[in-house]
Image (cartoon, rainbow, N blue to C red; front, side, top):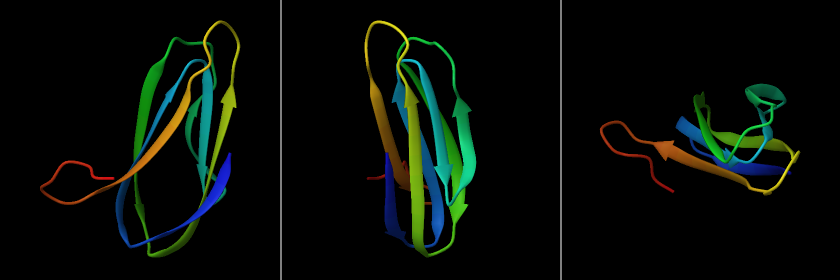
Length: 84
């Protein structure tokens, strides 16, 4: 999956929840690489992004049994929990 998103400058948490492999790229840069067989598992990475349009790509690999693929992007504001 690929999409372009207009974001304001800040710290963002990218969280995946997948059964089996996942890779996430932001603006063409690999930021999360968990390309392996695994049960439903969450992985996160925090990135500081400048304001503007950013391209996010998630690659997903299904190997056995269940198929689960989720990506959540949340802005992290200083002194608060993630939102969005």
